Each structure stands twice: as structure tokens, then as C-alpha cells.
Image (cartoon, rainbow, N blue to C red; front, side):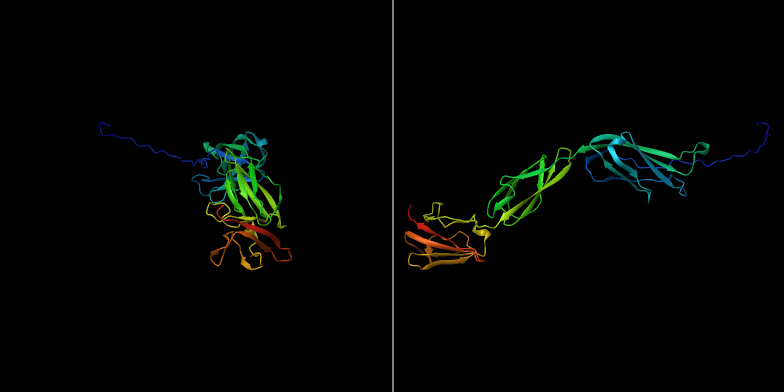
Length: 293
């Protein structure tokens, strides 16, 4: 004090360690699809708090438990865990994940911490695909496939595709082929559907034109055999009335223009024989060649 006198007194400060709360990272709201298969959500940032010797366990609850046939959370490993669930239908619910450590609550300690988030299960589309010619066709026929159930569609790669535009796919399969489409709805949920087109190799779609008018007007300027491209091993022969062979070719590409050795043939009737081999009877017929028509 002002007189230079002082007084000492000893006292003891006792510090008691208080358990601090465990930690769990925030879980964003979930927009999911109502699927019959099991789904999962990854949980991160899980610790028992600053007490490194402690362990942490998880528990889970839902405001609408009827939305799930299975709802469990895994053990914590390296600060992560997995919420596993299987839905019973579409709907929404709040889900609470609680992390609890083994430090207790003595002296006001905190041994648990919770995070709550919303899970919304959106209905998945029901994809379908149909064919305008059924599932059995003759080789060479063109089929229109139409998908329904979504607002956008993705077709898997497959042979015989001619063109596709959203829900519609034009195909001309050369053999039995399965076409698969994925339909996606406004919620971003998807489902797939498939159709198998069975192809009968009966040669019924081979159609040879019997008129040839090579005058450059873009009509019948070459001799067309529809669907011959599906029989690349066939042999095409063309003869005149006297039996002279004018054309003998495999892999015919519909390009014969009524000429022989580079010179135009005269008007008249010519004859074709298409040999398919493999014991199949040849296709025979005539071609009327007209010029300046």
C-alpha cells in the first residue's frame, strides 16, 4: 500500500478437464431417386473432438422411418462412415446423425453432437420401348422404336441404327439385336428398358427394280436392288437376250447404269440372276432399259 506494506496469501487453482463435444461435418440436403436397390451417403469429418484417445460411434434416426426398409450407419473409420438405406417409396424426411464419444459428461462435459439434413426421394420413371413392327421382322425391314416414361432419352450403342431423335429410334438390324434406352424424368431419375428385334433371314425384303432409265434425272438412273447390302456375299449377274453376261459382281452397290465395258447399252430387256449361295434359290427377273425417258 502507500506505506510500503504488503500481504501475501497462497491459494490453489484446480483445473478439471471437461470432455469436449465430438465433431461431424454438415450433411447437405439429399435429392435421390426411389430405387429398389440399396443406396448410400458418405459421412465425413467425424472425430471424438480434441481428445485423440477417445473413440466415436454413430447412431441414426428418421422423422419418417416408414420411408425406409433399411436405414443403418456404419462404424467410423479414419474419420468417415457410410449411411446405408433402402427406400420403400417416394417422399421426404429429416434424418439425424448423432456422433457420441466415450468421454462422458462429468463437470459439464459434452459427449454427443448431431447433424440433421433432409432427404427427398423422387419417383423414378417407368421406361418402356415399343416397335411399330413387333419383335419379329424380315431382314431388311426398317423398324421404328418409341420410348416412353421420361422427358429425355439416351439410347445405348447397337448395330443397325439408322437415325435417332429423342424418344424415337429408326433401326434396320441385320441380325437379332437388343436395343436399350434410358429414360430420364424431370427429377433427374432414370430407368432403362430394352427390346429385342428378332430378324428372319428369309430374303423376302430383296426387291429388284425392273426399270432402268439412265438419263440423269435422278430417278432410276441406276439399277436398284433394295436391301442387297445385307447380303454382301451374294453375286449379281446381268445378261442380255443372247445370254451374254454383262455384269458379274459381289458386294453389289446399286451402281450399274446400263453400260457394258464403259459403253451404254441399247434399249431393251435384260435379265438378272442374284445368287445368294448357301443352298438358297437364286432370285431371277428382268430389267427394262429405257433411254431419253
